[in-house]
Amino acid sequence: MTENVSLVPVTEWAPLVPELMVSDLPRSLDVYTRVFGFTLHYTRPGFAYLSLGRAQWMLEQAQPEKAWLTGPLQRPFGRGINFQIVHPQLDALHARLLAEEYPLFQPLRTEKYLEGQVAHTQRQLLVQDPDGYLLRFTD
Image 1 (cartoon, rainbow, N blue to C red):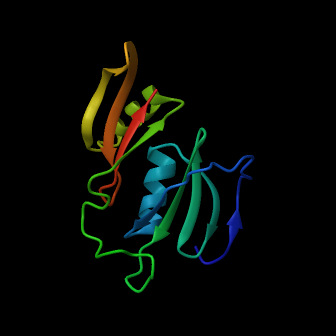
Image 2: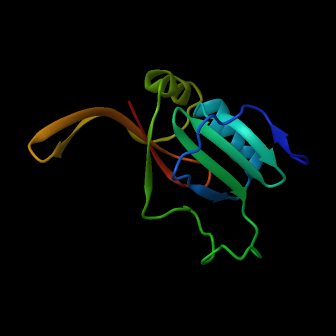
Image 3: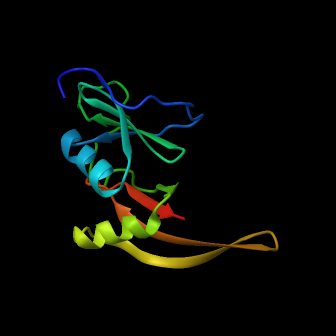
């Protein structure tokens, strides 16, 4: 990744886009695109912009001298947060994870969540990305 590359135009920018510091950007890009199914939209040295359905995501190569780091990065990154991402092909993702023998933090299962008196049902699985960020993929 030594040049700016625009691959797929973003048609609508999301109002909230997480930007995750990663220890090995090429490895993270491989996992996010090949395994998790994200689309790579734009790259420049040390940075990538991706999406999955309507979810948009940024990855940045961690650099200790960056002013935006609020403390030392220690694995697992992102302790205390999980990102819920609606996956348009949850069964295909699950099959890829199993085929890759990618470790599941929590297996595919059905959960019920209450919103007042209304019960919502969703299937979900949880994985950690290469740096330990916890991702909860749902249908």
